[in-house]
Structure formats: structure tokens, C-alpha cells
Image (cartoon, rainbow, N blue to C red; front, side):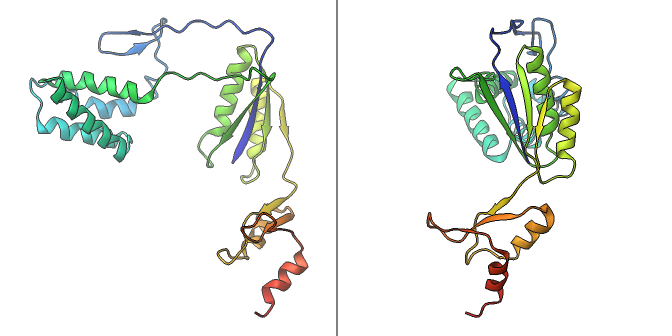
Length: 250
């Protein structure tokens, strides 16, 4: 599924409230208004890290600390490779910086996690054109349409002119869902069904029956078929020739 999200740069840059962060007791990074927008959303993950509370209070760094830390990172979906990198890097820092306590490891972990995420990267708008296109792609059910609506709502309030373009053809009611969100946030939606498809690869490695599934599921005509690896291997689709080729003798 994919959708397109158009944002036009306004004549004058909208004024935005500055976001100033500070470190509170306990290390929570909050805005100047005292609100951390991620706190509630990360409650489940925070509980996983919260299990390390007593471990980080230890006066020495034990094998148990490393085991529990690794388990917490994996449970929080940090991923095996990133977890391994973090664990190795933290062990190196403990040795290089002569750390002795769990709280020192915790602080080092916080620093490494922040560094891993990099610097904040706000949306960038084209300086050469008044039109900026944001293409949103992802699997079904991942929250694309709702996020598009949230972006449209936010940018509209910031003074941008927003248009939504539906490009989804593989899920029932997806375009209708985008239209509903467009009406809710007050932005226009461009939508048109699909007029044709191209089967990109049909050679000795692919099964030709896929063409029938495409025609049946999508209900749109096949325009071309890729028949090989060469640049000229693109044939206009002809149903009669296609079916005849299926039954032709070698």
C-alpha cells in the first residue's frame, strides 16, 4: 500500500513555538511546558527497562547486571544485532572509563541510546519548488492512513496548504478511509482507481498463472509483461497470445 501526501510551502514561514528541553530529576526529557509526548506511548517499553531499577542500584557491576540488561534490550525489540553492539560498546566503556557501579552503566546506556538515535530531523520542504511530496509506503494495517491524517492536520495548522493523493489499490475501502480522514482534517483528497498493471517479470523463473490472479483480484487490464532481462524485453499484453503460449508445445 502507498499513499501520497502533498505539502505546499506557504509564502511565509509559520511561527512555531520553540521547543526547549531540559533534564528533570530521574532523567526525563520534557518540553518547556513540562509535557513529554512519548511517556504514555512508551509505557510498555518503560516497564521492561524498569525491571532494571534495582540492578542499576548495585554498588558493583555483576554478570547478573549484564544478563538482565541484555534481556531487557531484546524484550524491548531493540533487535539482536543492535543489542550485541550496545552490550559490547558498554563493556568497552566500563573498562575504558573505569566504571564500578550500576548507576554509571545506566548513565552510559542512556548516552549510547541517545547517540544511536542521532540528531532530531524535522521535515524539509523544497527550496526550489513550492510543492513538496511525501510518499508514505508500508504494509497493510501499519497505521499509514491515520498517520497521514495526523501529518495533514499538523501541517495545516502550521499554515501549509495540504492535498492528499490516494494511491492504494490493494485493500478494500482504503481510499474511502483516506477520504474520510481528509474531510475530518479539512484537506482535499485526490483519488483515481488503477487503470492498468505491468507484470514486471515473466521468464523461466516465474509462474505465468500469476497473471490470472492479478486480473481476477484487481479487475484491471494488464498492459505489458516483462519477458526477460534485456531493456527491450517488454511486450504489450495480448490475452490470446498469452493463453496460446501456455498450451504451445516446446
